[in-house]
Length: 175
Ligand SMILES: CC(C)(COP(=O)(O)OP(=O)(O)OC[C@H]1O[C@@H](n2cnc3c(N)ncnc32)[C@H](O)[C@@H]1OP(=O)(O)O)[C@@H](O)C(=O)NCCC(=O)NCCS
Image (cartoon, rainbow, N blue to C red; front, side, top):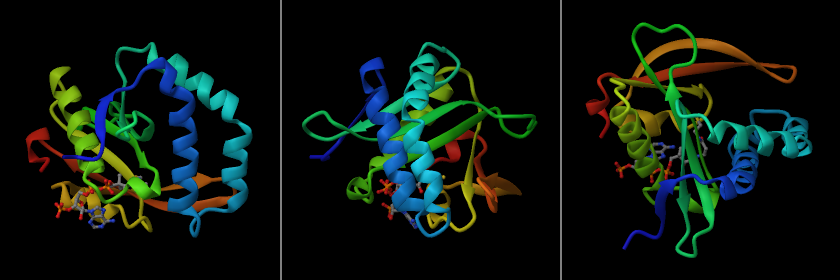
C-alpha cells in the first residue's frame, strides 16, 4: 500500500502548503541560498498564505497535495500555463516540494503525473519546469523523461544563481 495520498488542494490546506514550501526550501537549498532568505520567507508567512488562498480561486492554475495516512499535507505541486513567452511549451510545473522525510517514496512522481493529468484535461500539450542547476532534483526530472530545454540566471536576495529548464513535449513523454 502506498504510504501517501494525492488529492486536489483545498482552502484549509493553504497554511500547511505555505509551511511545507518554506521547510522544504530550507532542507533543499540550505547549502545554496543564504539562510536569511528562508527567515524572510517565514516572516512573510501571512502574505504567502493569503496569496495562496487568492490563487486557489483561480481556474487557470492548480495545486495538488500529497498527504500522510493521517491526512496531513507533506508535499505539494503547482501547475498551470507556461510563465512568459515560450512557443515550445504551453504548460508549466511551477513548484514541487516535499518534506524531506517524505521524499523518495514515489510521491514526487505521483504529484508530477497528477499535475500533467490536470494539464492534459485542460487542453495542454506539454509541460516545462525550472530547477536550480545545483539542485540534485534535476536528475529526478530527467528520470521522469524530461529533456533539457534552456538555461537562465535568476536573482534570489543578493545572489545570482543558474537555473535550467526541463520539459515534457508532448505530455505523454512523462514516465
Ligand atoms: C524532487 C522531489 C519532488 C522528487 O520527489 P520524490 O518523491 O523524492 O521522488 P520519487 O520517489 O517520486 O522518485 C521518482 C524517481 O526519480 C528518482 N529520483 C528522485 N530524486 C532523484 C534525484 N535527486 N536524483 C536522481 N533520481 C531521483 C527516484 O529514484 C525514482 O526513480 P525510479 O523510476 O527508479 O523509481 C522531492 O525529492 C523533493 O521535494 N525534493 C526537494 C525539493 C525540490 O528539489 N523540488 C524541486 C524544485 S525544482
